[in-house]
Image 1: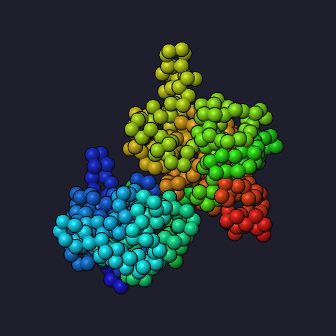
Image 2: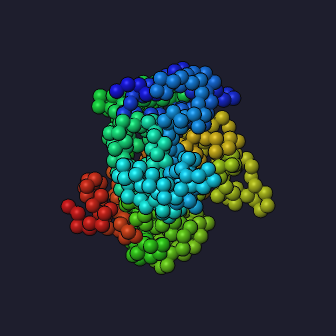
Image 3: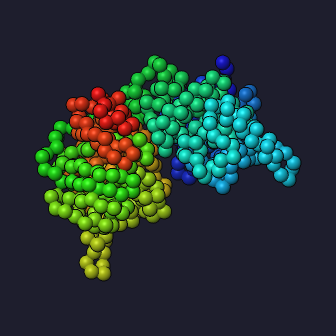
Length: 497
């Protein structure tokens, strides 16, 4: 094994910001090299520099012995570098083979040889162990299958260095397992993988080495086998943050604040559960199990076919989100960018938007009250921003999530539905969300927390409710938390031991 990619003294400056500060890193042939750090650490800027999307102000990039002061996307690809970003670069209206071969010279200059495209695509799919028909339209594929097509696109171009940015963020457990197997297959073929992820369990499962970045600077490279989760987290955040899942001193009360009886709709059938005051009720299940649909029906965002919802002991006819808010129910949605925050608007517009009537006197808005509320939540949630006027799209993922949380808390909701509250945010921001959840339940609020991360559910919940194909297959108390048991319930095995 030798060095296939070398970065020397890479610096990237933006007005008022040093995104990369004299970063030097090397990557060995055939290794899985994880790059980790908090949001804003410089990971994305680094991979975009290698992929040719960003031109550094200083430094040298050496690929297979050839040195460049910068790369373009074409030059990067020609030198065997492939990048799979979080947002897929596929054409939904084209077939798998048309996407895989897009940009490749196959057939006549004015048309593509369909037979040759299918043959070349089938060959690379077979080598990667993928069972996908080359004629299938990309628009009909699952997220996991589209991820595989992205990999095939890179491999058909003889990619030797593959950069994967948060590749499992939107995948189900089964799709994640398939992707990690694929990473192993690519490694066996001598491909170098640069793997960016916030999921520590994945990084420890598949990587050979881990490089940590913080505030645009390279911190340290570790052998995965010779480090621990605690050491890695400390390097990423710059301090020892203690237990990954902070302990909670309070216990749930007997009072039932939310009860759902016989809820049907959106593929869910006969949903029955209770949420107690001061409780964190975790919701487990595979992607597509019906957890989000249940949450949105309770919130009035999706229509239910039938069923009863009780808040604080009173039956409520919740048909739209404003009626849920009026009854103290708030939703922090799974997709913060599309459903949670108005990215093109400022923080001081986002936070008060759902409680603006409470701060109004007839036709006039109490600006002083609005400012006090915004300043309060920026301080309480430690939202990192130069000012309340900052656009939400300019914040890191963790701080965007805090704005969504603040927007919901500003409604004074005491029943909080949190759908994947830590998805796509770094370990430091996760810790802050966990601490916030503990603070909220200590204040007597209650949390219904949907998560696809089993360790997170077991670390934060008082009980876990498990879904499988639109049905609840069981409830598990904290003293009986056991991952295999919960996964069996999530797979439809009701009589799990």
